[in-house]
Length: 235
Image 1 (spheres, rainbow, N blue to C red):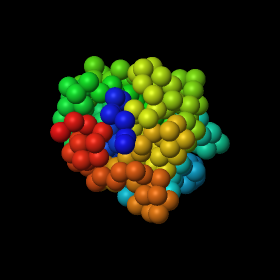
Image 2: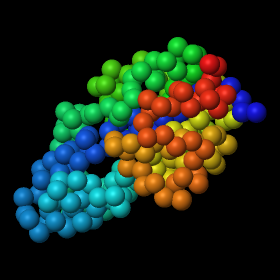
Image 3: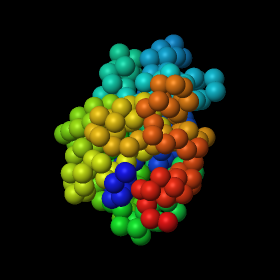
């Protein structure tokens, strides 16, 4: 029988934050701020998997799951990284959109005594800033980023550290995300995993991702009922 749920660890982009609504326009703004040369702009967009015609991040983009260090390394031969990063963040902060099903799930889990954490391959301060923009900063006990000193997903280090800081065993926690990186990290940490596949996510519903997930939901609005049904939460 599964242990009662004491902690929920969330990926950020595509899970708590609507990935495309937030980062598609921000990435385009960052690229265009960093160069006015059309050939350079196209080369930079190709390097990170951004479609300049539709102003969208492509499904195969490194932006979907990789760390900022990986993204910046790909962009560095083409544009000024500081100009890109500054413009991208201003635009993202202006357009941060929550994923479907929140914040009702977060407040309900908190009310049940479940500790909440974020484990993201973005930087820790960006995650904190976006939680503050959404008005959720007080709901989360722990925020871990790829620069927090415990590695990046798909390795389990940041997920295990989040559980440690929440004072729970991995078996008492779940990892919730929208990419294979999230699910690999959760499984390697010994946690049940939840795949979110809704419109705000980046999830490719493939055998690879679904086989890694113990639970698949199209919206986080469904998750509490599923956790009750699975015996992780009291009815």
